[in-house]
Length: 385
Image (cartoon, rainbow, N blue to C red; front, top):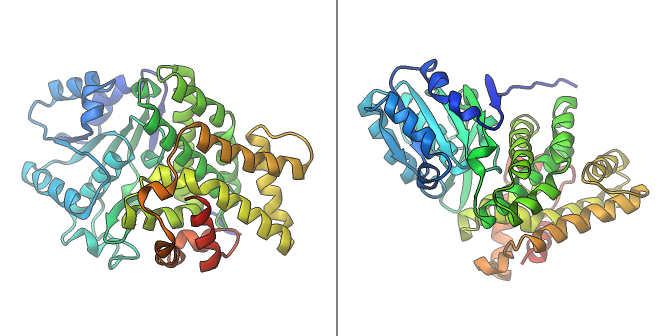
């Protein structure tokens, strides 16, 4: 089978590595702009923002709050064009990085963002590469620092703009910038990364390269997530989570995702469920249902993949015991981390079918190892309420 793997041009990882950002940014262009989250600018990343502003005092600084929408991305583009910027520095969580990617694409291409969005838009390819981007994550979750897409909230769902030039030119992953992150954001982000690693490993488009990254990313991550939620300033735990998120982005960019993310999109678009919360609530029921379906269908090869996932997460005993421990771990993690159930966001029986139908139209649903139907998607949603 043919495999292809692409990722960020340069990745710099390690505590304190963000000190290199001004020099790295200077290699990307002469007229940068900063896209930052207010929390990052006022928190652990404040010295980095100050250092960049001191070096480029006239550089536009654009604040991003919340998940990107058609309107919020459009609001970023005009200042970038007016200032004639030639590169972007994004400092923040996945929403900030995705906002910067989308703005970088529209800064060099004519038209509205909807023209380039998949599923809900025209899905047109970019005619001109996006502005080069330096990505500095301050949360550990989406792995956007290593993906070639940006997820945008569109009417009724979330959809991606996708292009190879949306891969950041450089990613700087400094776990020190994540110290003190609040428990809720830490928990949701960590569960998103775990979901991406699991879904990427069992995806139909998985490859030997992504397999190794996924299994490595899962090792010790659940324990580190528990620790980081309990002790927000635990640097060792933050380092494990930062590495896991980075690897999860590399995996999803090349192997794709599955049914959990297929459902998470319309849950966010229709009910406003935060992405990490949706992933956390659905991961255990989807995993359990998939394992059951594979047993009935004799899917031994994919069952063996779930066993490998369980072992990477610390499961012991024979294969059946390991699979049971995996489902139990995913269930208990959601409870222990205090992540909300989907019913708290207004998911009720009448909303199940429209969300399931929307999910089945996505590429993520088609990439899942089991072809779920609408009834099975509704059952997974109900189990997560």
